[in-house]
Length: 283
Ligand SMILES: [Zn+2]
Image (cartoon, rainbow, N blue to C red; front, side):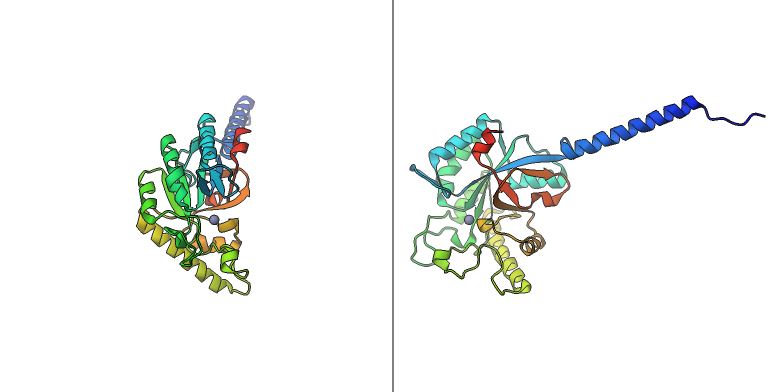
């Protein structure tokens, strides 16, 4: 009787097959990490505030001619403007997101967004997201005082824009966007807690403010409000926790940088940074 011996050739074939399976698994993992389906996607955010018909301009006032030139740059560069809903669908459900995705963002809700920028966006068929301050909607003076402010669009105008299917109107808080020269030196800084404010009091104030902002916007536009741009970009851990509990799934800051969205990782939709058109042109 001879002892049963393993066939060396079969062992080698099994080992080779195991190596091949491992290599395939590794390739799939790397593909998941660095691109392709189940992977990641770059997103650039362009930030605007007021659009002006004249020349000049500054950080908060973009001449219409410059805005038009930026849209032309996006068109020539093969960029594809996307919505907040597109980002949520990509990260949450693995929906397609175009290459060269860019999100066009407007803060504060100025009337010029409706009168000057919206017609240009329609011309290009570009999506954009406007973050409105609830207390300023439809106002030309500051919070029922006589102090004039740059006019803001009305809820009716917001609805007209959202009905186009191109524009989303999301939250820039209801009334947590104080202006020091008008509210006083000791006013709240953006959405942050006040000095001496307890966590519980702060959480309740923020919850109530966002609920107010969302309720008015949703009843005006019929669109879900799930995104918030932090006033002045100010934010903190407790702020984010409260907003997450309130159903906010996407937040925006003003720090510069390119964002990486990851399928199945909701956290990749928080604190999205902004780019300049100049940086897009450089690749
Ligand atoms: Zn703002």
